[in-house]
Length: 334
Image (cartoon, rainbow, N blue to C red; front, side):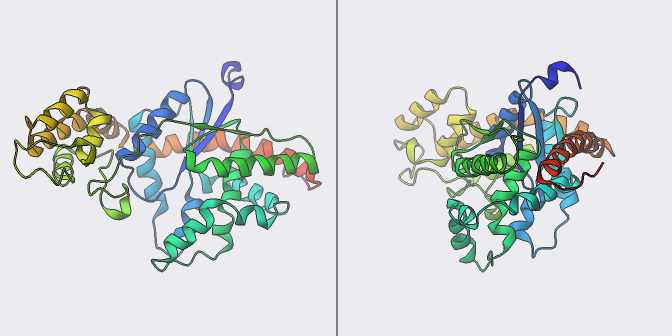
């Protein structure tokens, strides 16, 4: 590794392999692309995290991981610069998780805001989340971060309590043993909250999302289904863009959003034309990613990129676990 790379601070982040990524993920990935120029980045496809809620589903996580890696590569993550890998292929994640479980008070995990929220939300649809794995998933996140001694983690505001938990665990470990881990900071990015085409939260499970890999006709079809201003019955009715799902997308993807807003308010553009213009702009954004995805979707290319990232991740993880084992009094693996 060059001195230039070694001197940069480290970042760790990841995504669960639960299906194709949608445009709600696009701003996150674009931020990752920017960050890889400034930091030494480790980006993990966290399949063990997927099992915390989908443990009873028969899923081919290997193929899902390949599809997510394709999305990442198509948007511009560079496997020469960045370690892109599958979490479960680096078993030190599980080893550090187990070591941290020995020192983490149960009450710390029970107070994480998302714990009770998710139990209530998914429990209402029959999902039993009263498992050790689900209770411990914020601890597994902490292990993911600490394994690479990441100084920063790009997150949304809703994930900040998880970063604070990680910082507490770092402080406890360093106090009990030795100063091994840095306290990571949360890098909160400005991520636009786009609704799904039906106005609800954009989610693959709701079938209301536009995938990053969507073809032109798929984009047009999804945009046609978007909820518009219910008060507009005719093309020349005065519009209220602030209540329209289509306009929320225009605000992110249309360069002349002010013109679109004014024409809607004045009744100079109807909902059909407004949707067609949005679909055109969305297609312009996604077309380069589709093209790059095709370049990467050749036999063996994604697997080699993941293998390269796995090797880098394993080396960093093994170095950390050597330290952890030594300060905890455990025999070293090598």
